[in-house]
Image (tube, rainbow, N blue to C red; front, side, top):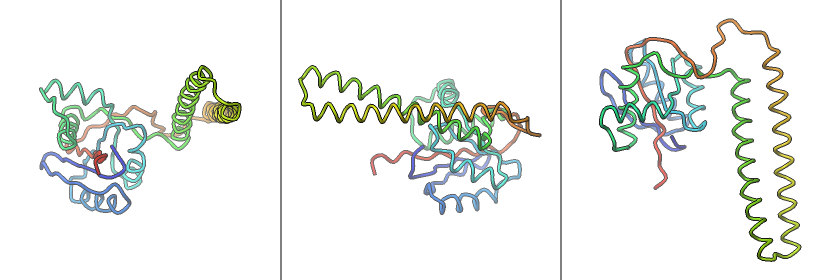
Length: 211
């Protein structure tokens, strides 16, 4: 899924559509979904967080929307002999997967868990940046870099270290608050869903890197 497009495929009518991944596109999407059965279920692959904005919009409008692990969709595609991969093919595959397995899908976590996930992803990005920088520093030292450049490297590494430490503290505090919070009525654990619907609709934010 990317920032540019939403591709959809719906069953049982086999409707296809493409909309912009924007507030205007979301509004048009909601208009499209209003003409579909009440037991509609929307599914999309997990894409590292790019699907969350749309996910929140759908849930806020009372539409059952779930996130699906890409590994399950890949296995389903292989079982059907599908090796080609396009956005349109993926959309149809996931719709048919939901028709076959309507109980699967991850529900939208509450706000605290969304924040926890965002902080975790950000920390992983900062750790990876520190790892790359450390490798670059090692390579430059072998080349005999100037003192000025080494000072810049040291300052950047210190900044990354401070950011990681700050994220660690934030994650620890948020985790403690989450543990101390009493269970909510109807609280849904992230990554688990159990429901049965007949009209799955898959939405995929189409990759548009060539544009």
